[in-house]
Image (cartoon, rainbow, N blue to C red; front, top):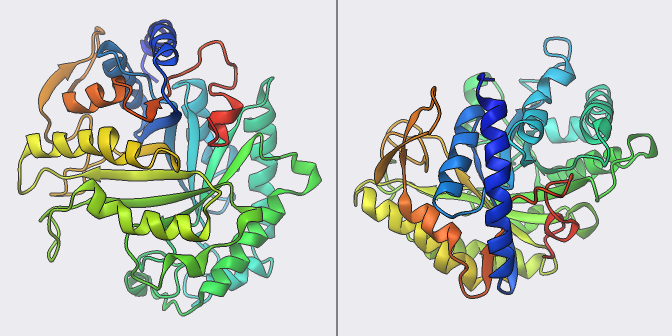
Length: 382
């Protein structure tokens, strides 16, 4: 943590209180949580940038956590980024929890092994630590979203039926959608054991699918309403940065899969997670307009369903997906601190977040709420 972090967050809370008051006064029909997949001081500086432009500070922060042995990394250390998101950044974590079967890297059926109890020791350690060190480490309790085993309809994770990239690790995946459903239900059921005290006022479970189907339709993976609090879509406009891809609008990226998800889980709120766009081949301004359209047009058009937007904020080689601090942007902004960094930014992003649009407004931090956001917003009902 930088020496200026405490001062930075203190100033941010004061600014956020003003923005939250304005947002509340101009709120329209639906409230949408907003955040990014951003680490450390960059997340905090993005908040300062947003608030300085009249936009709300981020309310959620996506944190990736792959399953790994606690013998090599103690569970408290594994969960530290989620705790930092809450304590330092003042955001509710969205924990993208990846069930890598670390004891069975070459097994073709990791879902089945997990559902059979082979990883119960890991699960007990995880939920015990989550409960004692994170959730009940303060009064009132902290809370988080868990996006478990995302994108099973893709073909790039070992919990999917097939995973060609996994063969590089000697893992020739061959399993079914039914095994995914069994694993999902087993893990959520495990978390609900009385000793963990992890009710849905502290943990909201997210079932996520990719925006396109590479391994069968998304509906065949749905684990059921009783173990799902939110549904989610993950995907990006990669333009021409990946061979065979072309530029797509936010509506072209999201509309088909959103309709599919609403068909099999109509009662669940929807999150858009790790969504973004590149600038290639149409340029930086086209990317800015894409982000503006996503937040000002596409989300409001589905405001009854979409209650959370979490943008990707990390470039991947030529795919310049970052929305703050990446390799390109519409303007260069320097954080107003002695050790402040300089970041490429997108002014259209801040403007879209700061302007209440017909049917939707983006929720800012609630500085007087020790749990950061309202109960209704946490459950996607605000």
